[in-house]
Length: 111
Image (cartoon, rainbow, N blue to C red; front, side, top):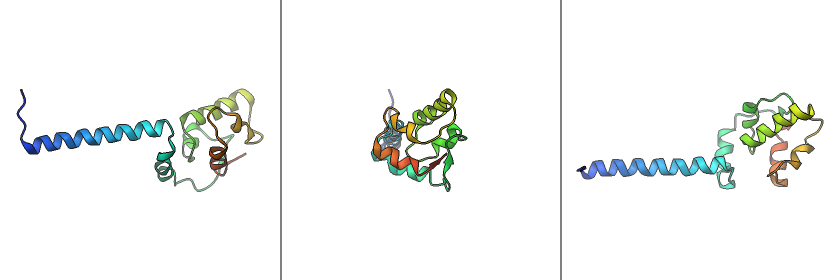
């Protein structure tokens, strides 16, 4: 079959570990697990001012720490269905929105 030197085995194992770790981190980010909040914050530090929730695109909303794809899509769908937000209160009724998460994201949003 294959005969690998010890150095080649080391390289193959290292690549497997890197791929496995990357997959775990990706799954954690997609599921919005709290242990990965530091990654979200590090990725989204470029957000200097509050984003207008009625004008923001999905990409703009994804820059907000604590807002993932599902939340960004909920916001844009809500605007399309109900018109512009008059307050940030409707976000509280969104599935999966805890009071802590709501408090964390509203400081980055404005009407």
